[in-house]
Length: 90
Image (cartoon, rainbow, N blue to C red; front, side):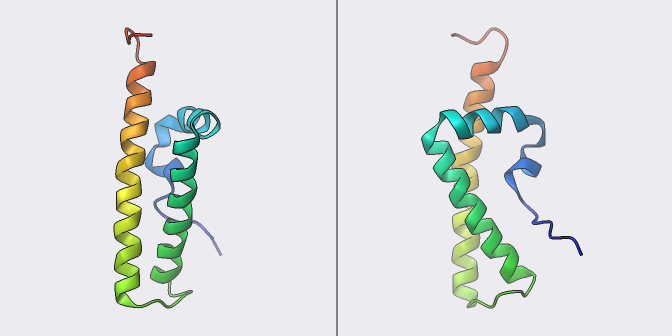
């Protein structure tokens, strides 16, 4: 039985594996956001797979928090991607 959790950051940002690793070790803010995203995403997955029961309101709050975290993480990843791009100001 597979324990694959959908919506993991490594799947969402598949082409940025090295960048995610670098951010996690060099950017404390990103590392904190990524850890919280991981925890919230796992909670959503447990609810959706019916491994854990939560109220509809709590499930909705978890999904909204996951989306907010993903938006902030995406901004950080895009900024780092642009900084790494050829011709970017050093």
